Image (cartoon, rainbow, N blue to C red; front, side):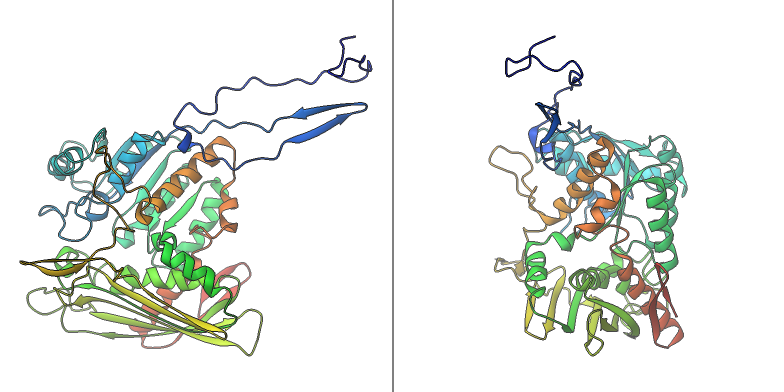
Amino acid sequence: MPPSRSGCAAEASVPTPVRQEHRSVFPEPVRSFTRPLVPVKKVDHGEQADIVLPQLFTMNKLNVLMCGTGEYTTGWTGSGASKSDKKIGVVGLTLFDLRRLGKVDKLGMVGVNGSKFPAIRQHLEQNIGGVYKDMDLSFDEFPKGGQINPDAYKEAIDGMSAGDAIIVFTPDPTHYPICMYAIERGIHVLVTKPAVKLLSHHNELIAAAKKHNVVCFVEHHKRFDPAYSDAKAKAANLGEFNFFNAWMSQPKSQLETFRAWAGKDSDISYYLSSHHIDICCWILQGKAVPTRVVASAATGIATSEPYNCVPETEDTITLMVDWQSTSSPTHKGVGVYTASWTAPLKSGVHSAQHWYYMAEKGEVTVDQAHRGYDVTVDDTGKAWYNPFYMKYSPSESGHFDGQRGYGYVSIEKFVDAARSVNAGSTKPEDYDANGLPTIANTVLTTAILNAGRISLDEKRPVGIRKEGDKWVLE
């Protein structure tokens, strides 16, 4: 009998522990290994104890397809670089950097008009490759050969494998078919807000993501804004909710950028109020639920010269929402969410955004537009900047240095989650429990937005209630 580690003879009935060989868990940079620590287990074999190490997971790099070629993905708008605060985009830049850091491998990009890609590649090479060191800007393009194909996303996704991922920044009506097509093929999904326009579609995506065991996040990046996340934590200690008021606007020049879809495919409430409605839903998760929505709108600017948007385009939309406490039948709250894309052109900020939260024991006020950091230039006047979102200035070594920006963090959190699920370290449903903007955790945001649109169109209040395990409108 072989001696035990204590030097005594082991009992014949005690099996010799078998240990599996493991490859190094650090084939990539250490910062890419994001598996939570697992406790070491002690297994007793009669008089002998064996220390069994937890299972180790290799986090493979993630292949990602970018759906959408516009401002948020590349910084390119068709007429040149964007004039907003996203001149070189967010999604593409973040993924190029995550590839440099060892978390991402192959990249693809799909749009509708393939003839845009030469200009997009030139733009990226000049404004990313020419500014930051060690950036691999390669990606597969769809549709190929300069073709125009609204269904090019299908070809691109068909060439992927289960466990790969897509990031969707396309017009609102296309979110549902693209996301569902990917989920049904085992592809992880990160979709921009609003996730979808219809509550029924949101419920279907929740069910599909669960069925196919994939990660599905909504890119509500303001959850990762340090001011917003800290305010959310402080609001948790203020007792029953009473009142929430949010304002968000962008300058009238955005109507030129969005003329192709403004008022046709979506509205300003879906586009901007989705941010603060989600923040309010996040703060109140498990504490209160929305029960009724009434919407009102201002019109006349977007449909006039020089913007000439379609007649149904609203300038400013306000949603008033009734909230009911889940723990006290006597406590009811009100949320007012306003968004506009007809703000002044030279207000000094691209996105004016602030919100106010009042509860029974206190209040919280957040002004995200003015961060105590402004720059004044003779030609353009004063402007307030927000480097907490995306920091575009290079590091001392010449590399991209915006990894702490919440626009970057939002995408990295998704990449980390997808890699962790692929490795078997976590399950998709694990992320529903920790405050991340999963498709399940964001259903009430869609419910409120969808109810607001119906209220505007049908000029009536719209109710929200839970029917079984699903939220429905009435």
